[in-house]
Length: 461
Ligand SMILES: [Zn+2]
Image: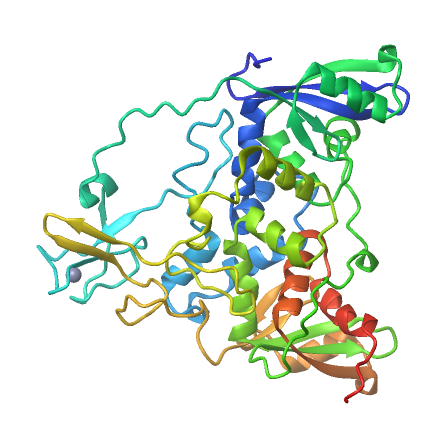
């Protein structure tokens, strides 16, 4: 079922003519491989992908979050590299995905390896390298000398590895359940759906370009009828209503002494959020969402957050069953590349330890691109200490120095006696609510506030 256009892949849709809905799709391993690789993209790259293809469906507040990083002045970040790390998040899977895929989906910049320009610069313990040309070496020079990775690390280029698997067929349901495609299974699926008569089913082969694939991905975050929406209706799904975002099913409540806090100003009369105010700890948490691979975010929300919106969780669950993704080694050593910031609120999101490469000329070490002082210990945070930010409900983050507090108050047009302030401590529960709202809602701070409204007040014992 290969498409004749080399930039496209084909999928066969079985459509119920009565209801004009996709019952199931027959797809080759080329499509399933692309879906697998998309799940590994950091959320920031998902935003870029969806933005690049101008999909009808925006990814919740992620888009605003990404644009906020782009619009924040470099002086808000601890180093120039911090901004690049967020705008072009690297992935521990980058060598694995997108190279062999039929559709070109990955628009991230290739990872660079940079040295300083001092001849034979090295210390007793070895030589530094950085992935960012704005980093500064121990000798004081900028590390703006691009180097070939294989040459630098003395890696022999990979011998030809035959990893190709036989062509398999898969069935994909409208809500993105995936299963091996055997004719007997199809019969059972149809019978389960109450379809007895194959004459009411229309077959349609459609070509999928990277544009349609991005559309499919963005719809999968919101819609339970993804294939129908993308291929038959060609329209956007409504944003998930706030009321559908229930508090995650986590038993432990946040300790009240959590260091990360958010002050929310809201209108008492209708509880509309006017704005949020927070320091670098909260903004670091928000920005670190951009670096988390989609599948890790979904897993976190699925395990603890009862993530039921859209159909993307079905996709992840079934691909994990078929290909045992979560049992793979790379998962165990941390899911972010070395030196990426690990949000303390989400304990399972941690970065891999720094690798030390041995070369004939001594050790090569990566330096911490987040730290302005030369260091190889993993420092926290992308944002300068003692910074203050204003944040809207849909997560537009602005430095407080760039807005006037008075004009903010004036803009709301709300009498001061109608404004209430609430301080929320951010722990795991709150971080999960924010992460979920980021992916599938346009009002993240409201989701956070609702967490407190809906919970019955606990009486002190
Ligand atoms: Zn140097």
